[in-house]
Length: 200
Image (cartoon, rainbow, N blue to C red; front, side):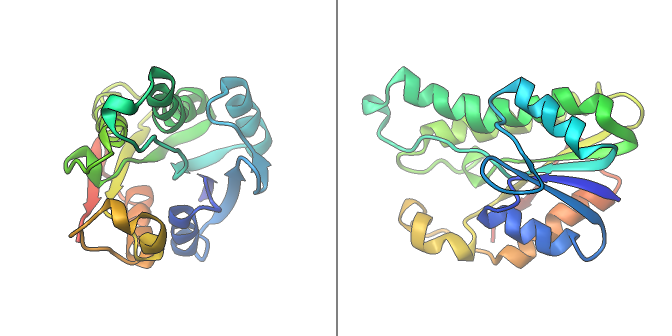
C-alpha cells in the first residue's frame, strides 16, 4: 500500500512508522519535517499535501495538540486552539482526502484515553478526543466507495513518560511498538467506525 503518515516525526508517529514501513510505501508528512510539509489547521495546506503525495491507499494521522490547564484559567482562545489543531486538523485530513484515496482505502485518526478517562488539567483534551471518536463513528456511515475510517486511542506511551507522566498519575504506560501494531491493524484490517483502545 501507499500510506500517507501525518505527524511521522512525533512519538506516536515514529512508532507507527516502525510498524508500517517494513510492509508498505510510506510518505511522511509534518509541519516541519517529512517528505511533504503540512499545516493541518489550513485546509489549503492540506489540499497541497494531497496533491504532492499522489494516489493513496491509506492515511494515518498522529498529529495534533491540545491545551492543558485549569479550566477556570483557560481562555476561549486556548480552548479553541485544541479544537482547531487536533480535532479540526484531523477532520480536514478526512474531508480533503476522500477524493484522493483509492476505492477501499482507509483513514486512521488519533484520539486518546482522556476521551473516556478525564485527567486533571485535561478538559480540552477530553473534549477533543471524544469529538474525534464521535466523528469517526458517524463518518463511517457516510464515506463513499468502500472507504473505511477508525481511530486509535492509546494511553500514555512509555517513550513519553518524562514529558507527560505527571499528567497521568496511576496510568499504566504502554510501549510505542505495541501502539504501532494497533495502527497497522486499523490500516490492514476490515473494520470501520471503530475506536481501537490500548489502555494497559
